[in-house]
Amino acid sequence: MARLLQALAVLLVFHFVSSSKLVCHVTNWAQFRPNAGKFTPDNVDPFLCTHVIYSLATINSFNQLTSIEWNDKEMYARLNNLKTVNPALRTLLSVGGTVNGISPFIAMSAKAESRAIFIKSAISFLREHMFDGLNLDWQYPGNSGSPEEKERFTLLITELSEAFDSEAKDTRKSRLQLTANVSGLRSIIDKAYEVEKIVPHLEFLNVLTYDFHGHWDPVTGHNSPLYRGSEDSASYYHHNINSSLSYWMELGAPAELLLMGFPTYGRTFRLSGTSSGLGAPASGAADLGLYTGTAGFWAYYEICDFIQSATVSRIIDQKVPFATFASAWVGYDDMESILHKVQWMTNNNLGGAHVWTLDMDDFSGSFCSAGSYPLVNHLRVSMGFPPKPTIPPAPTTTRDPLADFCRGRPDGLYENAADKTTFLQCFNGITYLQRCQPGLIYWDSCKCCNWP
Image (cartoon, rainbow, N blue to C red):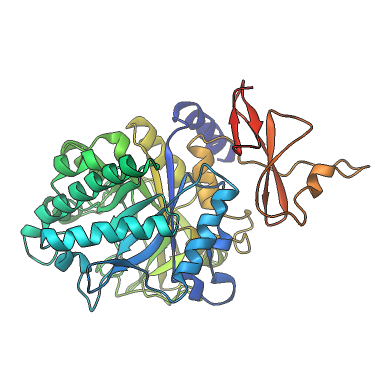
């Protein structure tokens, strides 16, 4: 099996376009998890993802973009400081959530005047805190029962896009990126989005191809199945990745704008009978995760602990695993299921992947015995991205002076006097050796690679 997975991974590397996006979400509530579950921007690997989205900001009563947590602005700075280590990294701020159970988008989007106030505040806020763009997390237009919300979502996206164009032209700065998290459920897609009208204005769409099943269902089902399962009833025929993304494309979304969602968590069930397979009777969620503490799901690092004593099985037609122990059942993703999903992405020419979230992978490498970020690193390699920068190896006899170069130096880019085709990046006192593209050399005056 290991050789089969390696062979499949090699094939995917050759077939997947290296310019694809790997967009990774981080959350501002992960900092409050206990002990080894605590996650802050300091835990982000700056070379792992092409984009990092910080969740979550909100909209205040004055229709302005604003932070939520008391230390969000400090966290913004720590995240965006990673761009001094990897200048290619792009960061976005996600706005959404609810206030007293109601989406703040509803009131803000209702009038042209309030939309204009929000857009002006968003541009100012993003520039002030050095973000590269905005991610709209309105879940979901039309969900309150008002059909006008669908049209207002289109207006908001169109007006944001036009304002971003104008601001970039006036200031000669790089244009702010505009993206959106969108549903993977057909019933919500029909109610929420004017697909052909919104896609021209978005850099990419994060399709939420997870939460297709969960502890709210009366029987077990996988969180993020690739295909329809033999146990799916008619009402669940389209609760799978293949159906979801195919539908977005049928409605006019270009494949290159769609990003497949990869969850780094699993959905749990409490079995209510002797059956333990897919479609087994269930009543609610299994026990809370020790670190996540939320009903119905476990982070991947919590699942790693669980499967040490659990029975692991595969859902053959859906290309995903599940595990059971006593009355607990969890469906999740592993290395093999990721490869199958990346192959689907490749065959359908998608724009890439988005991960929810970095803080639920084994980010520290303390739980799964597979190094840090085992799922996201595996996804990255499977998508064909080039190897990440590594610390220059030290010889066994005399220590390589480059290994000590960044000790005591500020984070940033530095000239490598020994080889102009390379340059050094310092991050947390560690030296990373980077190479310019063929034919270019590093210029310290612009902190960039350019022609000789």
